[in-house]
Image 1 (cartoon, chains in turn cyan, blue):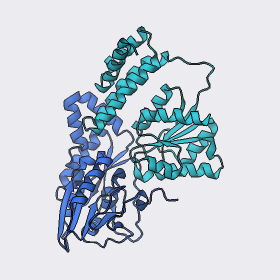
Image 2 (cartoon, rainbow over the protein chains, first blue to last red):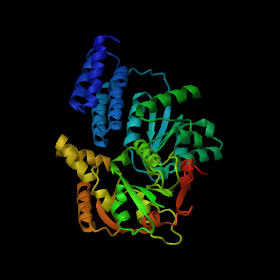
Image 3 (cartoon, rainbow over the protein chains, first blue to last red):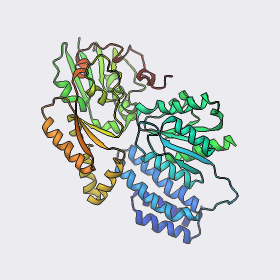
Image 4 (spheres, each protein chain N blue to C red):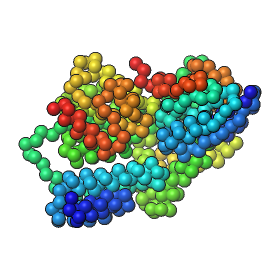
Length: 218
Length: 221
């Protein structure tokens, strides 16, 4: 990476960490002026900034309000950069059906994953929150989705993720979809136990996981 | 012999209001760790390992976002309520057929212990307002609590209840939610302190035993 590009992407990441929407917009515009790759700027700038914000959360420097304000800066930058992402018009977009499971209404994390999946080139069908297991399955079938992405913040609703997989098994269509799960109480151990295809600890990891899962699928 | 109770401070007033039958030693943990289940687990394990010479160690917690998963009993029996969180403890009325309390979706539960937390909604509002201004504070809070439609204060008979309910009213006003109260009980709290710690309501692990998600009925077909 050239020095200037590296410096600019670092500034973009910093604007997210500093919760500075105006700066995120200004730097994103500069990325376009300099003709740097928009997707690379999102990945190494905005997304990297959100990951850093996540680290600060773990260190108890940032709390949920700060993460929300960081994501606002990220969204502001995304608004500028997204239209400039190079699209292969012949490429068939891979589909993800995403939602927060039944009984749960916490969707901040899910919304972040959704935006980052869309930015990464996925067609995302957002079912919202408090989504019954059967609806995940029905919509995935209707949309001919590649991935079903399930989110929850509560331990009392974790089993609804297992229920989605049970329904797919019952209908003999488990192999048609990749299942990825995430959320506060979720773990790789739980993903393995219920037979999910993957677990991701944050939004950036979710994008990497989704890409990996569809590569395996294809 | 003495029982040790390692408790979340959210239950402090209720726990200290119970007259113990045997010698009990309490150690209270900050509610702040609720946000970080991994850190809470490490803290609890550290305290468990440092607690020797007791006949039983009781954790006055639930699964708490996964924090209790993986805890290992060391010196003596480790006991924990078979619940997901403290809400189920406060709302257990001791009725015969009351198994797991079905929490109402979209409800934010409060109790007197919660109101004194550094990370309570009112404290957070002040913190964000001081740092980023009132406009941003209201915007952020509104997004954080967007999925809720009511505040429900659980009454467990604490002496500060009147003031705590008033403060809950302030929270409801701040978030533009309706406030209601519900009668809770110290029945489970009494069981935590004085037993019986039967396997229906509690999980008991002998030394070397590990707490698992399945113990809390998660991931079981």
